Length: 368
Ligand SMILES: [Zn+2]
Image 1: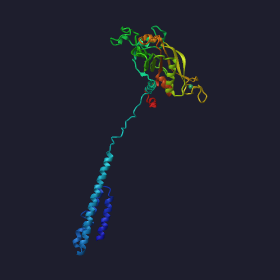
Image 2 (image 1 turned 180 degrees about the horizontal axis):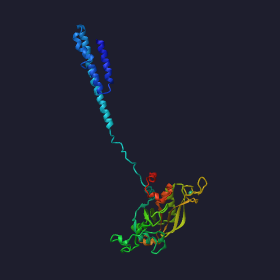
Image 3 (image 1 turned 90 degrees about the vertical axis):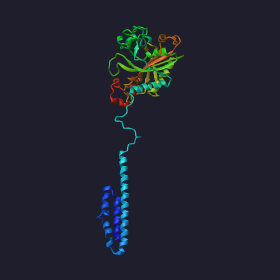
Image 4 (image 1 turned 180 degrees about the vertical axis):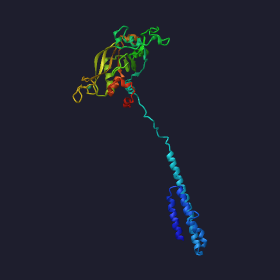
């Protein structure tokens, strides 16, 4: 009888420790300790046993019952703890993890990035970044930049004039008079800030002026009525054409790579004298004009050089319009202007100006 109790106890013990959940545990309790269980039957029948067996059987059966009740309680506790653990894991939120945005975060437009790259080059040389008005007086856009009224150079830049009757009351032209029909326009270049900056500050002056400019133009792969420029102006004692060449050579190397070379060619702008076109050695053919397969390089049209900007020594007449500390007899400086779209197109091999403004994500996301 005692052996049977021990084997029942061992069987129950193994089943309890393997029980997967509370329901299984309850079944085991009924089976081994319930009213109809074998162990309960043994305990009930003790009084019918031989007197010599009653003591050992009763002790073994009671010990087995107590031990199994303890084991059931312990297993129940362990199962409950595991269940709580699982629930916590399932609901866990790690607040230290970064969020998952529904769309990838954006990035700067390729033109903004190019503008900032150009600014950084000149800020590194000690230049300040200034911005100016996009609606400009004819005086600053043309007259003070050595385009007197009737000058044929005005025809080079076909302008958008502002209807003077739509201007707010109190706006006056540079002569202190109500503006006439051709006194206010969308600036055709960023150069008006040359004169505005010199009026506001004595020499020396080193500035770059990024901004949007407007010209009446056709719309095609290389022309738009709105585009962006960066103007540059350096005025100070003894500034010469050599400084212009060195500064723009540094800028070209910073923008297009340290192995680039630059050259100056004579050009014409009304507000610089002499005026130059700055070319950079072609980065597609390294200046040879030929591609690796021997064909003529279409980027530089076989010349080995690419025009990147216009520049020149500030015309003394411009200093004459500023006056003050800017004595045309003794003041010297240089100015330059470059198209931001043109620099970006050359840097990234972009074939069509319109791509910058169509906001096609497939185009824009290439420049992240
Ligand atoms: Zn080339």
